[in-house]
Each structure stands twice: as structure tokens, then as C-alpha cells.
Image 1 (cartoon, rainbow, N blue to C red):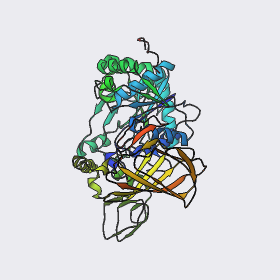
Image 2: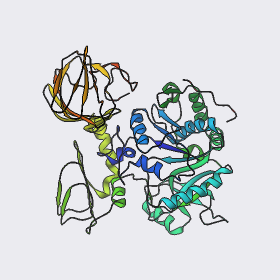
Image 3: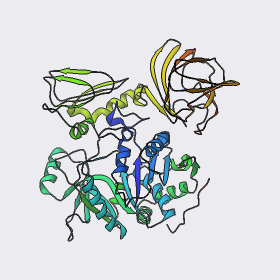
Image 4: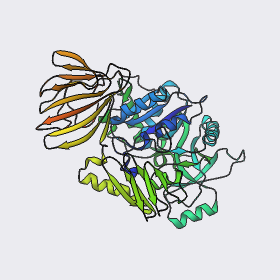
Length: 487
């Protein structure tokens, strides 16, 4: 069984914690590990092979780092130049898998779901394998616990076998209103559509070709021009842009006669809003879910998330308060599904807070813009052991570096020298320079920039181990055999 992890998405529903450049699947929202890592770690150890991860191009280094942190070597990291929904993403993954084994079973999982009962999840996966092995297209239906209006529903017949065995799908139901959702819950036999699937690679591709030939043909054409770039496989933008934007449900599952449902009762949540974070978080005696340093008095039924400061609340109820270094959101719990409206408005105002956090992650480490004013900016920079920044120069700013922890190897024009704690250096405008951490602990320094222009696009990269183009504004940056038409 080859896991296919869908790690796209821009994180708008969990703003301001989730951002376009660092969405929710990379955050530890329901445990100590990120949601991507949790998704991989709950897989059955003896059954799951190396995963295929489908991700946005700008998230590639985050994906690689998080996989390495849990010791997972991927079969492939497929990079989408832009999102085209789940049907094309899974098609590209299926073509990759089919090159290895057309009959290999794929377990398709979003990277941002939460599962409380891992054993129940694994039992459902085992049931799904039996149905998928014989050519069925399996989806996992969640046993509903309430009349939920935020999920689609699936009607399924009864199985003559064990209670958890696969059963034929009779129909799909769009997200219902509250009255209809209550009626479906009361009637029984209906399940939430989890967005998790299982099928053989060749089975999915055959049904995709039959029911959505435009997607199939475009993905097949794109697969002939994939490019290997370091540890990544890039999908060509000039071909992929012509691919229809469609979900697995609409493109295949609602049209195929091979759809089967396996029930799953495993404490599942898509963690799709701040109210679901409240649902899965431990609460105090007043039903307040507190993540971080908070003091609540005469308040109940609230969710508080704070990362770096005390939040105090008095005499309130049913509020969601999310505080990050550069944004504070206060919302009524009943309105958190509309957070994306805030994000849309902020995007219209071209606010950077929807795209990046104040702390920005790079493949070599991170930086935090801690102060800014007229013609100056102060950053806290952290460089991982053994990593180095690009060899670069700036045309509009000079930099002062003060080492506060670890050892730095500094290249400045023709000279290279070491700096240790409490030592500093100056990088003039136009000087070719590079920062390298030769030690075994993180290198931490304060950088003071000064000059007429301090934007991140004032970087001319002369050499870079991460293959990033120069210059880049905000984002850090072999042909393979053609798949047989039989597949």
C-alpha cells in the first residue's frame, strides 16, 4: 500500500495561525507533531510503503524537512505549480505509482485531518484494502455524530459481510441545511464524506479516463514532461494550466459504478475551522479551550490561542481569540466558518499577513522581523547546523551581524572568517557575502539592515545549494520514462 498525501491548500479557514506560505498541515494543531507528520505516523507500520506527497511548489522545503524529521523517505514529492483540485493531483500521483506497479494500492489522505482512534482508522484501512484489491474505488465514510452542515453526505447500502466491510454507494448528497442534516442523521445509513480514498492505481486511472478524459489526457501529457529537481518532481506549468479543476468526487466517484464505502468511526475531524479546534482540544471546567498563556475570568465556551504573550479575558462567552506575532483575530464561535471572508478582504488590501508570518521559514532555517522603521530593519536569524545561505549581494542595503549563539563562518568578498558569540561584522552595500553554520547547534544572530530599500527582492544570488532563482521576492526556491498507454 502506497500512501498518497495531499498537502496543498492555502490555510484561509484557520487564519491568522495558518497562512498561504505556512498552512495548517505544517502546524502542530492537535498534537506535538505537525498534521502532515501525524498523518504519516498513524499509518500501519507493516503495510505502508514510502509515500507520494503532492504539494505546492513553494512548500517543498517545508515538506522535505518535516518528512526528514520523522525519518520518512518519500517515493516522490510531486510539486504542483498551482492547484487544480484533487482529481488531477491524485492522477499525477497514480501515474507515478503505476510506473512502479500499476496494481499497487493507493491510500489517498489529506495531510490536514485529525484522527483520535488510530486503531479504528487502521482497521478501516485494512477493510478498504480488500475492496481495492479487487478493483473497487473505496471512499471512507465517517459515522456522523451530529447534524453537520459543513460536510457532504454519502448514502450506502448494507453489506452482507462483517459490519465494517465495504458496501455499495447509492448516492452523494451536497452539504445540507440544518433541517436536512438532522433528517439524514435520524434516518441512518448516511455517512460524512471524509475525502479519504483507496484504490489501485490502474483502477483509478481507468475510471478517470472513462468519466473525465480531459483530466486524464492532460495529466498523462504532463507526466511525459516531469522534471527532477533535487529531491522533487516538478509538474510542468505550461501543460498543467490546461487541466480542468475538479475534485475526485465530481470527476470520478459520483460517476463510477465501482464506488464502495467503508465505514470509519475513529474520531475523525477535517480541522476545517476554529470551532473544530475547540472540539478536539481539552477544556477547563468552564468549557474554555486554552492553547498558550491565557487568563480567563467569568468566561465560558471560548477558544484562546496565543503564541508569545498573555491574553486575559473577562466576562465573555463563545469567543475565539487567536493571537500571533503580527495579527490578532477575535470572532464569535458561530462565525468562524466566515474567516475566509476576512482573508479575502485582507488579500484585496494586499496585506502580507495573509501570506506569511512575521517569522519566515527558509530551507536553511528562519528569520523573524522584530523591528522596522525608516531606512532600517532588525531581524533575528536562525541557521540550522550544517546549512548555509546563498552567496549573494544587495544593491540597496548594508547589514550588521551580531552573533548571539553558535559559530558563524562568514564570507565577505575575498575573505572568509569565523565569528563566535558576542562578535560582529559589517557587510557593506554591494559586498558579495555568505553565512554558513559549521557547528552542531543552531546559529543565532541579530541582523540590522540599513539603506534606502530593504525589500526581500534586493537579493542577487550568485550561488545557492537549494536551486533558488535570483532574485526572488518572497519565496525560496532528468526526464522520466513515458507511462505506457496501457496504464
